[in-house]
Each structure stands twice: as C-alpha cells, then as structure tokens.
Image 1 (cartoon, rainbow, N blue to C red):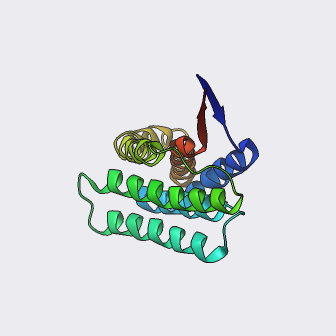
Image 2: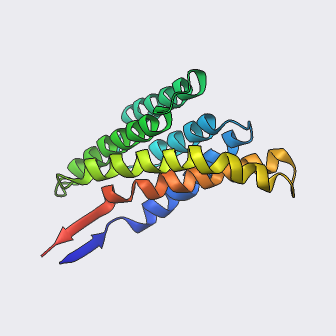
Length: 168
C-alpha cells in the first residue's frame, strides 16, 4: 500500500502559522485563546479557497474556543478540536474540488476529528503543567507563549489526515 502526503509546502507553512497564532494568543495565558489563535491561523492559511470560506471557518473555530474559555467543561477541549477538524476538512475539500483533484477519502474527516479532539484534550491536560514548570526558568508570559506555540503545532499535526492519500 502506498501512502502519500500531499501539499508539503502548504502544510509546513500552515504549521508555522498555527504555531505563531497559538504563541501570539497564548501570551494571554489562556489555553483556549491559544487554540483560537492557532485555529484562525490554520484556517486562513489555505490560499486555494476563497476568503469568505476561510473567514467563516476561522470564526467557527474561534467561537468554539471562546465557548471553551467562558464555560469550560471536561469535553470543551475535545469539542473544540473536533470543530477545528470539521472546518479544516471543509476548506480542504473545497480546495481539492477547485483543483479538480480527487475528493478527500471517506475516513479522512473521522480520523481528523479524532486527531483534533485528542490533540486539544492532550493540550488541556499536559500544557498547563508544562507551562508552569517552564515558568520557573523564564518569565510567565514567555512560558505561556511557548505553550501556545506547542498547542499550535499539535493542532497542525492533527490536520495531517486531511493531506494523506492511499494508493494501490
């Protein structure tokens, strides 16, 4: 079985933007806002899709993160990750359709939703402690920014199933 990763350059640029967006809003010390920053950066990174779709996806992801920040529940982080995956899958599917490329594989959305939910759940469990430990060595704001950047990278990696193709 042949597994290909499509669009390396765009994925790497999106991962860098997600880390930068997560770090920028992570400076606030809020993990949900860091998630919103990385989600907005990821959604806006797709150049092959019209702006209105990218903005709509970014607003949907940011709204999920704001709800997580305002009324945190045990399921808030995984739900935010699933929303991010759905938004990115819609953007990716539109980009593939515009390029007259084969559509996303059937299981790509489900795998991306699991990966996004898992990434944000892991971030909500692990990053506060890691950020607190790092704050012992650097200023709190720098530690929060690093935590946000790590969250951004995790969200970008969680979108990888949307770029995989299986061949015979």
